[in-house]
Length: 130
Image (cartoon, rainbow, N blue to C red; front, top):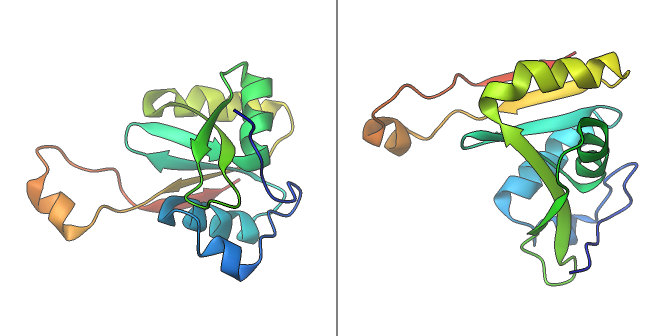
């Protein structure tokens, strides 16, 4: 499967194309717009994931599997992604920083319906830029 993605240095997709992306990827690109030089790690369930060029860098530097994900856009197709379990964040984030990368970690607060149906406490919302 061929993986395509926008200009990887700026993640600059036209607004019309961004609207075709899945909400997760729209949010990811919004975070990337705010910190274009940083590697963005976004909490998705029990994993932290990186997309587009960030995924390529994270996978290479941490020796992780580079995979692909449907972008939600027929034009864009599949995009690069990688990830690791949430409990490995401290270790992997430290390794990336030791390599000279700035890392942005984003955790989204769950919706009220998720909170009401949850048996465990969700992670807090936070955006950390280091």
